[in-house]
Length: 176
Image 1 (spheres, rainbow, N blue to C red):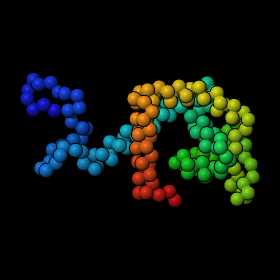
Image 2: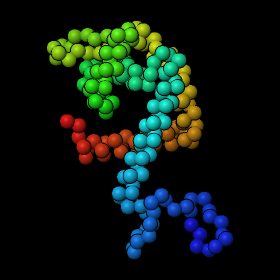
Image 3: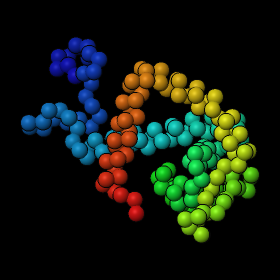
Image 4: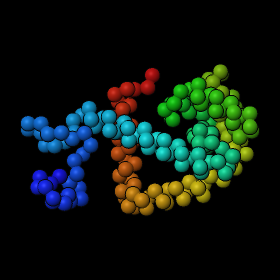
């Protein structure tokens, strides 16, 4: 920020949110501010992605949550606990959604050779067809987001930073 009254601020000269000057400080936010700002940004991003997912999934007769659970089992059937671990949500939430998907004919439970009681969730042909109807909206979101971020290279950097953040949190708070 300019120290001279009436002088215009140059792009990139703004103070960072939460920035404060301390003796010997280089003008960077402290660790607590960084973690707070990061958490708030991730919470907001999560809400934005869920909102976009709802808009994309709705025409296919799905919700964002149904899409997430079906998407988790497209490559291979998984137990509910495995889906929950991969998505970072509770087993009970996934169980409720899995039961709804089965009830609506979009998924089915099949025996799990590794565990008698933990059945595997797998998409039905109707579930796969619903996911296929989402593909154009998903592709359009990807194209527009890539363009907004300045191209595939920058998009890949953003994705890598988010993965790194997730890995760091996992190292600090491993799942049980």
